[in-house]
Amino acid sequence: MTLIHRLSPILLAALLAACATTTPTAEAPATDTPLSPPAAAAVASATTEPAAPAVPVRAMAAELLEDNLRPGEKIDLDSPEVNADLWARVRKGFQLQDLDDDWVRKAEAWYSARPDYVERMTTRGSRYLFHIMEEVEKRNMPAELALLPFVESAFVTHAVSTAKATGMWQFMPATGRDFDLKQNIFRDDRRDVLASTRAALDYLGRLYKMFGDWHLALAAYNWGPGNVQKAVARNQKLGLPTDYASLKIPDETRYYVPKLQAVKNIVFAPDRYALALPVVANHPYFLSVKIERDIDVALAAQLAGISLETFQQFNPQMNKPVILAAATPQVLLPYDQASAFAENLARHSGPMASWTAWVVPKTMTPAEAAKRAGTSEALLRDINKIPPKMLVKAGSTLLVPRGEHIVTDVSERLADNASLNLAPDAPPLRRVSLKAGKADTVALIAARYKVRSEQVAQWNKVAANARFKPGQAIVVYTPAAPAVAKAATPAKPALKVATAKPQPKAKGGKGRNVVAAATP
Image (cartoon, rainbow, N blue to C red; front, side, top):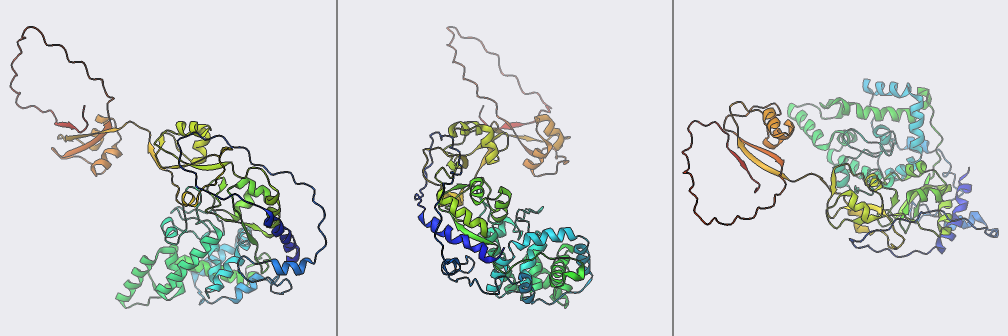
């Protein structure tokens, strides 16, 4: 399909979208009142439209169409660059000094032995590569950086490492926050295609300014800038070279840049490795489509005429089954589906979102929260990922069914800052202080008070197999005893009763001193 055929429906979409009206959003206040179950969101049946008069589509599209990646610029539909080979553009932008060592050859051999893997990886990457190249070139950066997600995640937008890095650029949580990538119960911008690309290139630019060398900047992206700085300082102190190949670094980082070099070599000459690259045209694969109301993810995919899985490939940042327009004002869709989405959205007259956000007014059990929200406890736990034996703390935000009486969407403040805070659903604990006996160990104390050894060790900052010194202060936390009603004071007897005199304390007692902090 040529670009002209791809773009021709967009004019219709633009005209239809212009007719759509929306209701302004406002923040629903936190409430203690029950929330009604939702009305199901569905696609309205399309009505038969009269045939539109013939129009010079090419000329009108050229006037009205705007590339969302190049705001303000019109697309020249006759430009030979539009259907050029994007891989050729990538090759033309290579700038980094080549590495040629055993690490590179090891990576080349690994990729060469897995042609199916390379095919899947490059096919996934072809969806996003044009956008990344646009951002790389805007910053005058080497085109090799556009290939970095092949190494980081193989362009799997939901990839999560053992260290909790996520997204195709593999941002750690703290680094993501440093580059304004929101991470809350509704979305994780580390998986957002546009936001994470912007953040990754900003980060790489900062690292290059720090080290003045792209190989060191890439090593810092993998290992952390502080670690690379220490490795450079160590070599400087020893009078050794401070280039990438000369530094003492972990094998993972040692292999990192050679893997990127191997990908570069494959892109430059795939035939040399008996590999094939998919055809990638030099134009955007997707469009940004504006949304102005909260909408269910499933409904958005249905309006676009694509599967839920395909929709999530372009919009992987969503954590919940609803898109909150205040925080996510646009979705990404392939060209053809973007026009279908705009047309169907303009025709849609039913509910758009069957979920909303509710701020819990007080600490409560999931069962109580579900009752107030008009839903089942099982559904509430599942949609909000609440584990067993936990309470929902006051001020937490829960995703709950949206009742028909709720007309406002979730506010930007809540959509950006919502959090879910849980507390153990367990009786309060009583702090018990005691002195260790001659043979007391962590295990013996744990057994005596019916708690785990790991807990005793944590409370007293010792090892789980530790032995206490005689007389050492020990702290243990046990469930507080239930309150007992205070007995009524008996009436004073009419006659005085003789009381026994207190006996002197026996000498040589071996009992332990125990003090409970809680009042009996």
